[in-house]
Amino acid sequence: MSEAGVPIKESRVSKPRRATKDPLAERRREAFSAAIRSHGLSPIELARRAELANANSFYNFKAGRSQGLSAETIRKIAPHLPHADLGVLMGISSGDTGGAVHDDNGRTPNGGSDRKSAALAQLTKSVQEMRSGLDTFKDAIAACLQHVVEIENRLADLEK
Image (tube, rainbow, N blue to C red):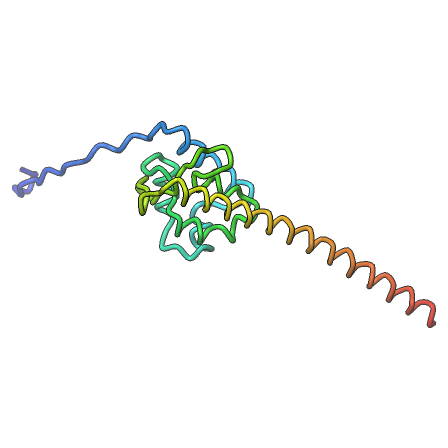
């Protein structure tokens, strides 16, 4: 009873879940932390940019309460982490042997067969190579435009 004579309701506090020690999950956590750090983002800012409801899945993942980020979450954050190793984040990096994509609770949706995982790994690698090629192409176009501006300036000087 409280001092006012009102019965005190006991509350039950559940124990926090322990962080898992799965080496692949740990590698995904490290890759995720490195990716957001390298882009100067906080989990909250990344969630906002990716139009996620909140950053809970990031915090749960980083704290070890889940084995990985869902494929949908990774799809949404990928444009905001352009040079991140998405294969590592998804658990299917080239060093893994058929690791599967996990949902936010560490479960493998749709069975996560090795064939699907290998195909997803190949697609992820292809997307990364295309991004790299596009970055190179953007740099080449920027250099060409700079040369065009320099030539136009020289022509303008000659016309004077």
